[in-house]
Length: 494
Picture 1 (cartoon, rainbow, N blue to C red):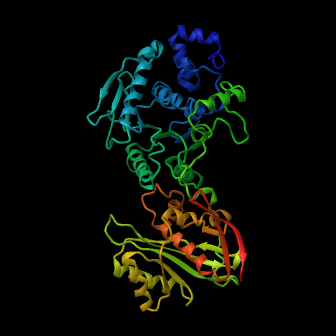
Picture 2 (picture 1 turned 90 degrees about the vertical axis):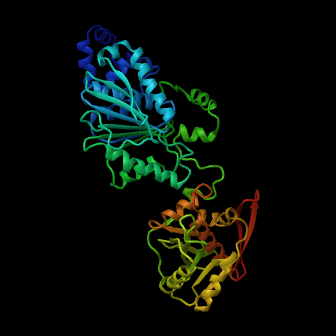
Picture 3 (picture 1 turned 180 degrees about the vertical axis):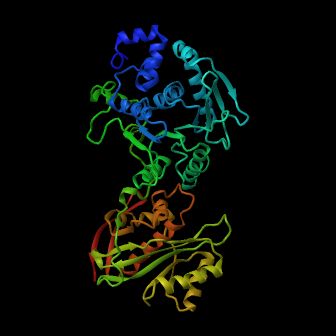
């Protein structure tokens, strides 16, 4: 505390309420280091001062904070800031804090209440408060002296139309509303995103401030989506990331971790290397069963086109669904232009793959239309998975003069996708910068995403294309651990 507020001034503030309220009203930095001094066990780091400064400088600017475990982010943002936002110059009237579950929400409210009850100076300056429980299950502290309320709720609860007197929420804080489990599937990630954009943000008004505190749990998590929106100019706000050790290998909190030994001791407390990487270094770490890693994906900005001298043709993989009911899988088509021969072969995945729920007649019509419009050359080919009733479709297409080949799948879905992994990593397969987001999501999220139809069509396309050109070359495979497949050698037999 003495590093921020001189001892002499602290003593004066303790004795004179008018002095301390005057000083702390204008400065959240002084407010935190005076009223919450018992939390300050180490010298305040520059990144913590930056968080405090960004909280203090605006009443309306949205703010997103990702920081390592134990950084004090929740204490500053979720515990202390709402109190200062009411007592201080921002004069907020209705703060609502969201946690992931009701149990977490109840615990957080208990923490705030305990702090207010046990902190005599803060309790005296903030004035009496009363605790309330709303009919929809949230927990609130009401400060009648200031006409203000702090409510804590969970993401499971509806807050449509919630008000405190005439005030709609003017400060919304989300603290760890996602975890590893909730970010595993696209469906769950979409649910959280739509909850924020469709229910939470509309509950405020034009001057409402949104603050989200959390961690980077997935390439497509809530915070990562917001980060991308800010970078692309689709959203406004401050997005800050604070790993314990930055990209220059500099520790951000030398007051607590004075040397490498202190950092190593902290690391030894963590259960796994994955947890250390994810929670302290803020690196997005996929599950151990990952087949395709996001950093392997290589993009192209311009398609060489069918006039390129190396163009070999257009091919497509077709994964069929049995039913058009909502519960059924999708019928998917992933297509690509093939260029070059042998070791110079490149597979350019085309944007906007087909993903529809169709019955059998509609599937036939779709294939006929796709072949006519997207695959004009006679030698262009559809590879159609041949399982059960699906065997009838290639036969039907052949009757209509469409070049379609029935392909019996080899191995399970994971093995088939694994067969494409080295071609993806090496850049033999390239994806469009835009237009294949759903396909890429299924590839990197294989095994946890709800649907994998695009990934199946992709595997069928790539593996069948390689087999189709087997007269030009032979690939030698090496199986490691029975799952992962690598192309270890290329033998020219053409």
